[in-house]
Length: 211
Image (tube, rainbow, N blue to C red; front, side):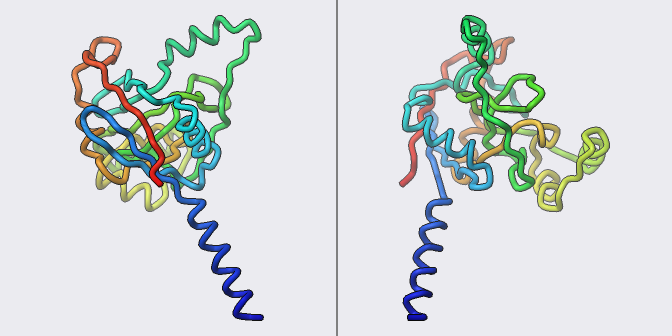
């Protein structure tokens, strides 16, 4: 009986572990890069998985590229604002922000865009990847004072070693990170753009779930 009990617990644990691991692949004309979705930001993780099933991002564009900052894709801020302005109900669908110290703006982090709403709630169909820049100890100390936060040892180590965008922590939801092919998004972040940060040549992408 004890062996049966232990086996049952083992099976349940394995199933839970497998259910908590979600990986997706971004396909572009410049290569494929792979992303791990965080289990500790489940609402944004599940939004992405539903968006893939609904083909929301199939043939989408990276339409806002700023070197040393972000590569943003999906529905553009301007288009969201125009669409919502024509909605007679005045609805502005958003997803409540999810913040976890393990999800921060390291280089290659996947975040959800938003407007300047007080709840820090996310757009439903706009994402970005952190291109980031070098971060110093002085930068982190100044941000801790300004934002009233304390960076964790893990965050501090990563930022000081590889850089990122720590000033966005706690304001925008991060829900995943690139684990393979980071060089591709880094290359895209350096593409030529116009004055409005649109790439001068279209940068399309599609997403699929990795089984």
